[in-house]
Image 1 (tube, rainbow, N blue to C red):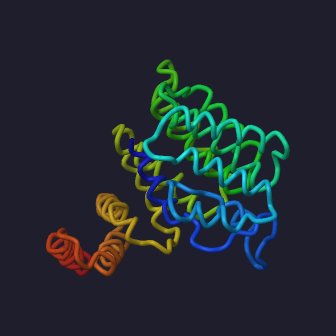
Image 2 (cartoon, rainbow, N blue to C red):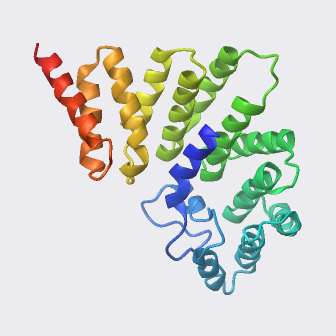
Amino acid sequence: MLIDSISRLIFRRAIVLFAICVGVLVQGKEEWESDALLLYNSASPEINDLRARSTGNERLRKYAMALGMLHREPAREENALLAKSVFDKLFGINANDDVGMASAYYLARILHRHLDRPDLESARAAYRYLFETYPRRFFGELAFLKYLLLEFYGTDSSESTSDRLARLEGMGDRLIIPDMRRGYHRSIGEAYLSYGLSETKAYEHLKAAYAIDTSVPETQLDLMLKVSKLAELHGDLGVAIGALQTFLKVARRDERRPEIELRLANLKRQLLN
């Protein structure tokens, strides 16, 4: 699915590659950055690193153990249910520390992705609980993007697509984490395009997503091209040219470069005339 693939791309780089000290914030860092260190997407060496560094912290040790169960290969529901039982206990003991919030996220994720028959309605409610309960925190805002996914593709068909998008648009205004804001704007913009509802609305959101800096510009290549195309349609040639120039700077080996170079030259000529 479109939005889920976007969110995977955005958060792949959040996998931890360094030491974690739960409950201790690095001076000068936002509080949500401490939460983000607990996000893992696969059964990777980082989980083993987390387990090794949890000496003396029983709560972190159990969290690492549950992550290992959840991402064990081959994927099996029985492993997900074992992980769920640990996350349930961790969340029940303390719902408001880093491990508690991370456990709540993975409990929702299990309902959404790790059962033989996903419980999408319960997952939707769990994601909504997370972003309403933990505003301005990493897992609360990440849950919002997952909530968007389920709202776009699994909601009651009695609500029109345009009404649904209008309702979801306002909900994203509360996001503060740059990656989350980018993901929100990109998701909404892509939805306006894919449903054929409004190129103007799509441009508004995709341009907002493009304007948010990222340390991994390689993940934004398609966004650059879409922004350029929409900017040209709206007569915003400066933005169109800038997006293509950024694409060429980042995508040095992309097979689309010759085509993009021609487009860029044509836009520059239009700007001069």
